[in-house]
Image (cartoon, rainbow, N blue to C red; front, side, top):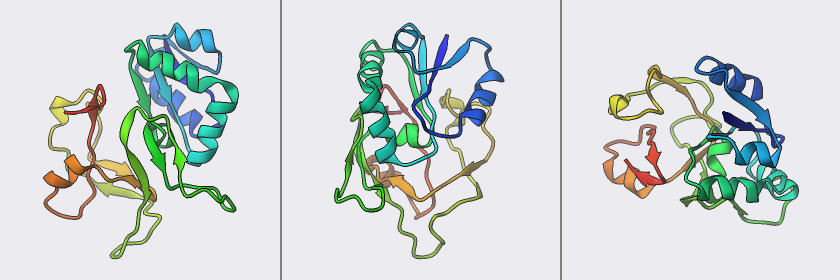
Length: 179
């Protein structure tokens, strides 16, 4: 069974609908034992980094996610659910005196504000993508050449080395290592 984590972040309907296209063996839950017994965990999300981490810490779900990751089971983050897998973020709630928020730390890197000189930020909309290694990625299988972007990014040194232009880049990782 796949557990989709209920931790107070949005885009739940879209996530449940997408997963239901592939399997009926899933549950939307915040129950620790259900999550521990799942074969995979999805962290959905639409919201702020600091609120996501606050919710995980205050409910004890962070420790449950840690156990899941330590067991070697798959973990898939969507939007803010993906961002919180990193060490930290600059996405701070208005009025906060903090300069950055600590993430789960499973992947090295910091989520930074997306500063655009030649385009509007936040950059929201559908864009043409060039997926070069679609056949090599289970995550990208069946994904079309369009995607949705927002105003926070991860600057990945491995990605920057391969980048030939300042266009948007998508990368996937297996076991937190570059593919």
